[in-house]
Length: 526
Ligand SMILES: *[C@@H]1O[C@H](CO)[C@@H](O)[C@H](O)[C@H]1NC(C)=O
Ligand SMILES: *[C@@H]1O[C@H](CO)[C@@H](O)[C@H](O)[C@H]1NC(C)=O
Image 1 (cartoon, rainbow, N blue to C red):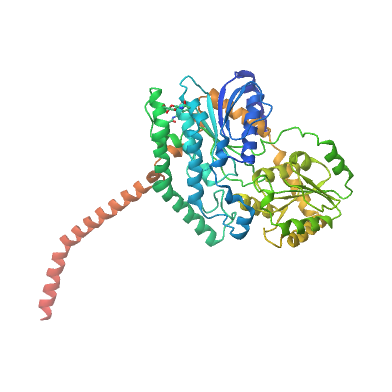
Image 2 (cartoon, helix red, strand yellow):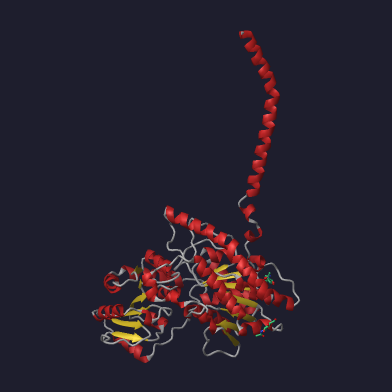
């Protein structure tokens, strides 16, 4: 309570004292709708306060205001191989956690391609450009930290996923692998013995790969793409290792209601849900009518924006339509193509206003792929879910949702319709899932400030204090050998060795007398 009051007062003070507009560069290069939504959340909040925003994005931000300048990198859609997210491919060979190295190198390449993009080059080439803060989405590659180095201003990372080892490692020492994972892990704490070993092994092999492969790769690109820009501005290039760990803040798309309650560095701020607009937009008239007229509630089904409808096998589409047709509920299915023989209670939408549907009191169930944005939205609006994870962090999101008691998991398979039927019956007949999600929704909303306001506050704080050095973890200044007390261990080892030598010398000095005695004894016997 006192804490809440203090934060409230502090906010009031800051808002009244510092409303000067600043210039921000926002970089969200991932060619994906959900990442675009996260970027929009940042941009929308900064524009709200009247700041000047430059937005590097592969998708256009619609209805832009004059204080927004967009830098188009839509060619990023050609950089990422999309066969990875092909449904058929994933059904035949589900490899959710493998290929860590492959994914990491692919994402480094994406950052390089974004930096090399003609439109971005034009921005970087202009030595008159100036920014007060750079806000970049962190997608595994650290090289995008160099935007802030070029413009010599504070860097803020946005982590698109829950609190994890990788995002903490940007601003502090890595958390203990005995109870923390990274975003691609397949299990949550508490770990079994084998899971704990696997996590430790991953941490060690990641560090090894970072040292041998990732950092040298990024460093080479840094020398090629960034150092000339610094020279052009008459500045000496700092070493890359300094650039990548120079962030002032991590703004995490995370919250304890959806993630874990880990002790966090002072400059890690959980602002999960900031991308959701505070006011729910009204539904289109026809959709409102469909939802209001459903006597037994509405089931909303969407597999997100990455899985394309053309990849769905025909027999699965047919089985799902048959299953939905047998239900008493109305089903709204977000699917990009027309389907033949759609039952009366099923409505196919090419595009769905997801927040407005989930917010509707008639919505009783959400069948989802378990992407982080959908997971956050389902808690935000308090709707229980059946989740069908297919890619990336969806597996861990769904594991957590099931463990929290508001979701059921259904595996992607050829018999998915039969399994889904069982899960739907359980969900609709057992009230515990709905109760649980309402509890979590209360926890999610019960914060001293709304996530959007918190975002605006911390960005302003970083600008006002030029990088908020007072928030940085002292651990970054302490080398590994000191953190592990290896110097103490070395000292103890030396002391032990010296003692051993001393004792041996002492022993040797005493021993001759002893042997004399022994010889005398022997002599006597003889
Ligand atoms: C940016 O500058 C580099 C040389 O510093 C030049 O090769 C490149 O063509 C320029 N690009 C644009 C788009 O201005
Ligand atoms: C580190 O960040 C500060 C501001 O927070 C900035 O002025 C400085 O140029 C950055 N240094 C490097 C090496 O990026």
